[in-house]
Image (cartoon, rainbow, N blue to C red):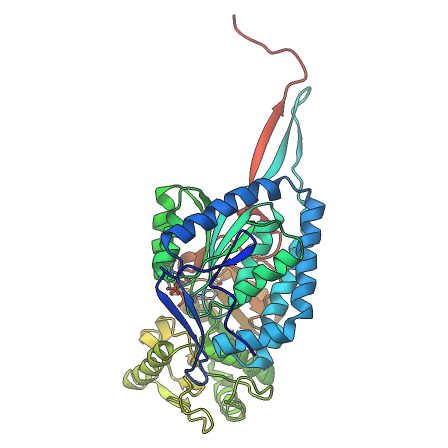
Length: 487
Ligand code: NDP
């Protein structure tokens, strides 16, 4: 398939190039080959994108909600019709197995466009009886939204930000990660074909400095970032200078607590999904797996047996379960943590190093890795690794598990496995995390708000909750009587 896009950027409904900008190479992580060459947006191009969005905003905010919804739902249909092509592109750009991208990337993006397309007609204010007079509220858009994505779910992140923003009547300038620049451009094409007016959704490529310029732009009203905590801090600082609204979806080191009455097979399935899906490059992953002592040996035995069956290999082969990491730099970082786990004294149950795939000797492959007997103070138990490295940690009591699960600066997600549903709800209520699961892990339907507590973020994506973050409320007091005045 042809990965090279028509041009690097998409502004005002058309592809645009900007040879002034620094080179960006997109590589296929399974081979290291360059699959597309692009340029970062210079400040001039970012400014042009914001100007296009400002003009697009005027048209879009005045478009009736029902029409806005119809455009979003048509775009969802276009993504669905192109799912295979978009999935192959996403696999080439990210290295994630086609088995995953066929169901979790453009498909999730389409669901999101569909969902928020349906919500546009329901965005209403309220009527407030003041006894004689009344007030009402209007839910109004914010203006130009700067949206910045990470590299693990490129088109999904673009849709999770664009769909609620557009549903509320905002215009968007999206900057993908420079590691995965391709699929956001296809989303822009689909939105144009669906009838979105020119300038309402724009894409600019670039590194962190392009993102920083976009975030600082005085005509941007809101910033929505998916990325690491350090980048979130920088973006929040920049946004604060011009008092912009912010949504931050950041990193995590989430706990998955398995009590000894849990169904072992289901708990092992969840731990596998929570650590090895997308080669472990998922923000909400349950990387600290707390296992109650009574179930520990059975859990570890089945985990090792089942992990041994994982098929690593060519991500374009639909039989492949685990693909490479996104880049050589990410591979080096993850391998360093695997070594660190050994040095810190954790017990290696399986994996622990680079993986050889004979047909793809240059790919960024690592083995799915499980450490047991991990202690809370170890760096592998405290820092986000963003690779397939699971830490299994023992515990005795419920209170102890909750306290240790909460002892982190992160708070993105958490999971609890138990057959005792009263305990499941009790424990979830005590966990400091924005997104929780009972007896499953990492499912993120569009209907359910998603986001973090503590350093894992501010604001929520998805569900009705996202509307709050892409709109503002105007209150209108209406006097029906005379105006009283002292003199
Ligand atoms: P980064 O924080 O490195 O980058 C995120 C995005 O921000 C990229 O597009 C990046 O551009 C851009 N950026 C970097 N510096 C700045 C800046 N100063 N101003 C504005 N934009 C900037 O994250 P990664 O791409 O490495 O993604 C991995 C991280 O994302 C992990 O920590 C993970 O947990 C988190 N994540 C969170 C999710 C959530 O929903 N909570 C979901 C997915 C990932 P460039 O890449 O070009 O440098």
